[in-house]
Length: 120
Image 1: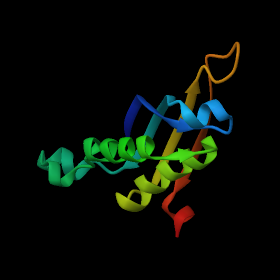
Image 2: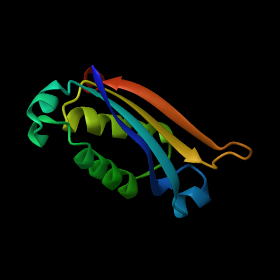
Image 3: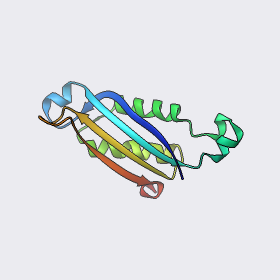
């Protein structure tokens, strides 16, 4: 299976359990690996045969900027679900990090590996 990679998508949003995190937007760093067969698009050179990562990215941006989840676990799971269900992919790995969330750490985050079967 081929990989389509979205690396270091830096967004701002409300995420966290502390009072300050509920009021002030913070950086949210997202990395996505989508597994797909890209041979049809490679052979046809036609966007209609491709996984349109621009469309997927815009959808993720809308979701993250419009959400206000308490837990990183919830938001990273929502992103995986959107990709797998709305774009009919079989597998995705999503890593979501909050840069500067912990003192002395560059970031803290969660990486999940999901398949479409996880959302049936």
